[in-house]
Length: 596
Image (cartoon, rainbow, N blue to C red):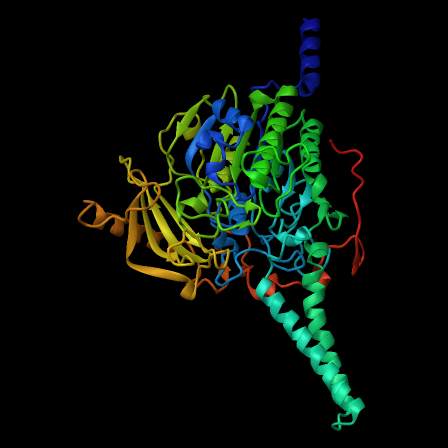
């Protein structure tokens, strides 16, 4: 009897040290997002000339979604919605003017600290969370180092990568992306000021006119001011925007693109290896395939599609290495792997070397084109051996915003009561449901509701209603080639009354608008979508996109300000991350320990 009691006591004392079985352990998550990748760039989505065997393998071993939708056709708002499970407008990241993404790392806009990301929710439930790669949702609010928008503040225990994004300004000789017309205007003003100053000095020296010293001093001051406003924020943009941080420390400024791929891959693999014995979330947010194009020597010139194809094939290699790492460590059966893009390819981006933007397959439009399918339909692949059926394909509408409720559900997190726009995907992914809970989806162009998608119950049809469309240029083109990026406001769009209506089930390329004569449900489609829009707008707490947005579903009562106003996005020296003493910022990371 005493022996039994002793054995029972020993079991109770040591029971907490017994490792949990694989069935009891929380699942790991490896999320992989490419920047600006077109859905038509991937083999398993129809491309037969760019080699993507590793991504194709993920699809063959898991579930492929063919109607996976980004919440916005541009980086900043799409990523805000991805992280929060909510339309970007709810975070103040819906643009009302020409600036639709964050443009300066030294600006004060970004994902508000009052927002809750899936990383923060998982962190609260015992997960080690990491982000390797691109963020592009802001860093500081009021002072350099307050890190109010930083990934560490938003639930990522570890961060290594680009707190901003890639722009052509990050690589010498690739041109300018950031407010190029304003840069040109400021440069011309600088030249005019210098010319005026030189003329005044010559006139005074030659005695042609009486020019007071005070006038010359004033013109000199104005010329220097114009030069500073142009040169400091714009000509030094590579130093200000193109940096690498490890957590809250700047480790390279400006960054070396030639070694970036190897470093991001090495950091991602290292994170998995360090945390293989505990639940973890890793978000690998690749810098590829955003311009400027860059590729490692092993991939340069190897594809049939020039530099862009080289980039896509290098992405595939990196995805393969990530999959190999998960498998090698014996984590596959307890790890959900996910592959996607933040939005569609940038079809207008090309130069004398060829196409630099992605291919969106049969779908109309691309990056920055509002609700046109080519800008928002992206790859969606989930792999989880033993949990998800291999080789399954689902055409039901799903969203990048669905990751938030899916991950929090699998991690055992209770619902926070915060209004979400995404739904748990597990019933679809596991084959328990043939369609998602998305009867309606709302497609924004900036802060403006551009289109609505309706998937009627019991029907294969998926109707799309466009209230306005971007004006392509030149007329008859398939994009905004004159400006390189489409805009969402004023004379840059055409409003439609009645709206344009398409059935994506029979017309996925949105080339044949429906009419009352060709579609028996035409009036019903307009009525149902109008009712859905009214209900959706009731969940928004402001009547105009430029107003502040108090969120009654947030535990905080402070309003959410427009994060993409000029006040928020323009460069401020006191907010600029810097290694060294500002403004003498510059450092190079020791890369001897990174993977080759």
